[in-house]
Amino acid sequence: MSKITIPLGPQHPALKEPENFMLVLEGEQISGATVNLGYNHRGMEKAAEERTYIQNLYLIERVCGICSHSHTTCYITNVEEIAKAETPKRALAIRALFGELERVHSHLLWLGVAAYEMGFETLFMYTWRDREQVLDCLEMLSGNRVHYSINTIGGVRRDISAEQKAEVLKRIAYLEERTKYYVKIGTEESTILARTQNVGKLPYDVAIQRGAVGPTARASGVARDVRKDEPYLIYNELDFKVITHDTCDVFGRLVVRVLELVESYKMIKQILNGLPEGPIAVKVPMRLPAGEAVNHYEAPRGEDIHYLKANGTDKPDRVKVRAPTMANLQSVAYMMEGGWLADAPLVIAAIDPCMSCTDRAAVWDPKKGKTTVYGWEELRKMGIEHYKRRGVDFSRL
Amino acid sequence: MSEFEKEEKIKGALEAQFPGVVSNAAVQRKNRVWLDCAADKLPAVLDWMRGQGFDHLATVTGFDEGENLGAAYHMTDTHMIVTVKARTPRANPSLPSVLSIFPGALSYERELEDMFGIKVQGLPPGRRYPLDDDFPKDQYPLRKDWKFVPPADEVEAK
Image (tube, rainbow over all chains, first blue to last red; front, side, top):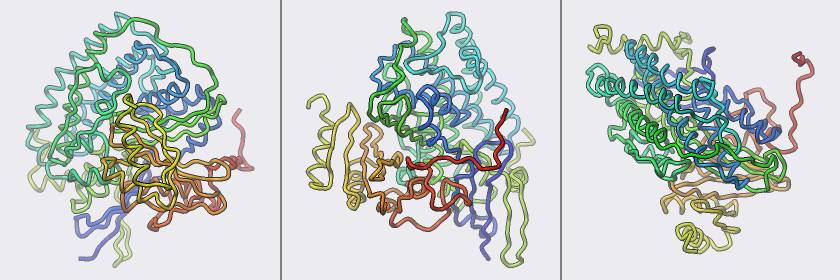
């Protein structure tokens, strides 16, 4: 059978970070895949060198629309380390609270996206409805739903009142109840199992070799979590488990994320119930002494690492950001090889790319010299039909 | 010494294993070790470190120090971060590839070529990253002497 190479991506008008996959097909099976990035390089690292530390906080927040708190917390940890600032305990606890709320919102969003790519639209509607609860919490606490801007150099910008605490706990109780249902449906529903088990395999040693991080690595049995391995903020005082799974497939990634939701609820309750008293911020000078720092942070998608070099002025000499999706993309190429074209959308979605943005796929037949263009939507439909013919049907649920 | 036993141990082991290659090794604080490394021995040092449990190359940070360009390799065993810095003269910047040890480093190395103009020896051919296909090939935006020049037909927003 002749091989066909198809480009998947890179443009989607609605999403922010495009990527492109070149898939080599033999029939309906993928025999090779390469990842191409850089369609949305925004020059942020250069821009950061021309802005002050406090201005950069707002720039760095916009690295990502979902992990906005992860990036600022990682950046600010570097700034405070170089400035030798004594950030108050209460501020660290509030940062951790936002970190976990962000994880809940991100994992619920992922669950919805994964369900949608499978064709299980009811689950998609459910999870996104429930996600509004946590977005409401974030809005109530910070004033914003996406870019919370809660961090400031030396602490946080807003305190948490007793009423807000009660309101957050109320919503978390509701989400805990709902998540029990998601755990049940995610691990027992036979149609979900049929779509996710043995799909997008990433063995343990390949995950390590390719530098996979976060839930993608943990679903391959790699027990790595920065929160446990090098506790930052107040994570050394919180009681939680690192969730791993050993099936190394999309199913494992689903289980890890759903069970991490449960751990996050536990942590949110612990933080709110044991919120230390005291100020929420200290003053930090505008100019930082010369020095450098590197810190990592467990973002919802995995390890986020930032490097910062200060040169004695009020602007950094060098800022380096490496987001988790970047580390995971080399693994995606591996996961797709040997799989069905019909599984490509789900496998790509399963690392929770911060740029699930592959909109169109042009299928080019070198023999006929003919190009057929598939939209992401058509490809998704093709995947659903592909499984329907094999008896996996969500429409009867 | 006792406070940073783990850190001092890896620092000492590196200095003993690679005399003359590793220099300026320092323990910055708990879980942070920094060191300089001769550029040509970089793959050997990273390979040895991987054998010591530092099997995750978190990222590579390029830097411009004027006379020298360079790259900092942030290696971690997830607990500790050891940053290995390799420098190369600005006149003819070149570093060996570490892809044979860390296949996941592909995009980090392409970034060094694109943003700093450091030639990475042993990098397979492929599409550039992260700059656009039509970005001038001889301009390296993250070098300190590179300044953004707005296009002549740019209209200022009022």
